[in-house]
Length: 215
Image (tube, rainbow, N blue to C red; front, side, top):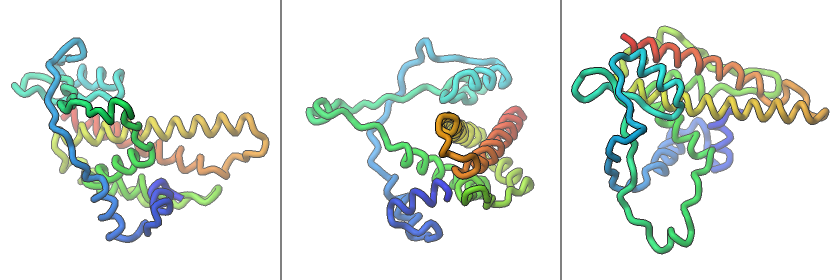
């Protein structure tokens, strides 16, 4: 069962229902506080070439690079901070960290808006024990989606995929560690092959994105 199917089952939704998917999207539309940029500090970087910027981004997962506003080179995207003062209630009860499943579904929803075909492969492929049910990945369709994205959209997609890949790699590492400690856990029964295949696909599309950014 895929991550999306697991999430739908937990909510009592039908994974194939457009109405339920719309309801999911509506649940993500929370009121966002006004944001103001932090002035560039020690974490601000500027690069003369994309090669330098891409190398820095790979060495700093989670950080975003973009073309400089003046058109000369690239720079790190300035982080945003919330301009809302904390309420008395929030001071007593600090905000709870977002549920990992909800965070993953938000990423999938954004990926679907940018690249529907890639989303279908990543979110709807599934496994049943040792059997894989992979959605077909068509390179020509993916290439068309890739070429239709703007520079900023490519950077955003790259960030989303890196976050997903890191989470899936960690899950797979934890799974293998648990298997090594328990004789009752048999390889092939926990969807590890699906994770391996999906991770390989994400690694490949990240290479494609970097090539597209370098053009």
